[in-house]
Image (cartoon, rainbow, N blue to C red):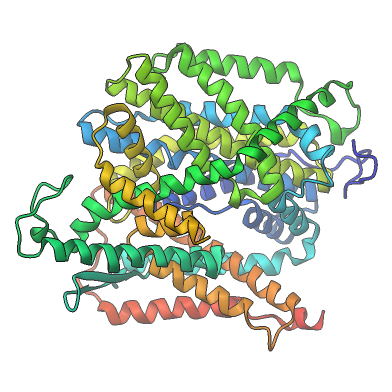
Length: 629
């Protein structure tokens, strides 16, 4: 152990940690945040980190309601909860691509069993690959790798007396987001979309998806990123679409992949047939660029981690805070998972696919674990690593002659497992950093991670199948942007039937953004997404920008409290809408119509949405107690 560091709970002290309470409550949060992230990621292509909201909620419930007072028990709750969220984050960017492919080819979509196995294999391998690196990356590099989210989560746990007040904001947001979702998309009392067609002086469209979750996403990501996303949408909807419409006006010009003349296409059709491919090219360029920029760090990370690997063989420690799962267990589990991936007929990837998963999975797990330690999970180039994996896997299966539908499925399967490995390794390292700071027992946290993986894997297939049956991936309700991009890339490599001109236009735009020293990915995602989504996200970002920029009336501490409280409220908005969204999906699949026969129209939408905005602002108003402190 690092002799200069002493955790909050010393190694010689034993307090409740992996208890029935922490397991049950952790499982509940894993399911909630996992399902919410599935809904959110499929809607806007982004997910939220559940560690801090889970820590806040667990602190409030265990301390205030259950009258329990164990920081390690609370840490275990957030560990299990965040594991469910991270597994979902890796899965929803890849597995829905299999549904989209199946729909295109008119074949059976992936079964619930296949999705469950993908989640289990990816999640377990992600945790196992991180375990041998804990001492090298978290203990030995404690002073050099800050692990921002993990350290922030530890701060929340250590500041236990603030848990109740902070949790209030989360629960308020959850209630408001849930009620709004029921009113809009359940009872249909108000429309959730405000849209305006623009015919003069140009052919275009503008709209707003007046939903609390999007407002919350904008607040969480901030003014800068949300502004870049809206800028990308404006380029698509007010530059490229009007140009295409102008060229095709009054003519019979028809451009692939559309099958009708441009003049006969609505604005939404122009986006569907052209802009999303241009956006896909820009997103692919941005993801791979982030990976290329990370290559020096990636190799340095891998070499340093392997150089320090012998640190794990220095002898067994008897300190509670230095005990990992046995290495023999880790090795046997990894070998067992690899063999199962190779031999199970339902996986259909064969020996080469299984070895590909093991080799690249361990490599990228190592990279992910160190990168999140340096720059945080939000900057971890998961999309770039996943795209690189899919492209390499696609070429491998093509060289092996497996270009049939089953071969394409195998590529998706390999990519999905590795994407989950990357996400889980990053989450596990952040959680173990939190545990290191508060004095948790590592092997108990690792068991907690595996519990979260198991639970989320068992419901993941049902959730994704439900969403697809209720709304359909790639629809206006669930655009599934990342999955659509992955489907496009794999399809292009395996069969070569893509509108490459449009994709390379997107790549060229990405190059221009990079030359202008602009962040490519946020603009590219905005170019790819419908403008209704990015416009609402932008509103949330502007609200946060107003709070952060209020320097005349508030000092830095006050602004931080406002923003932190607003983030927790926003997390509640996202969770509330996501949870009710799942319930509405179940109702929809069951064929039950709960909509009423009247609506308050756009005036009702405007009033309700303004109330949500006012609630977000009010949640961030400082309490007198903070001003006095």
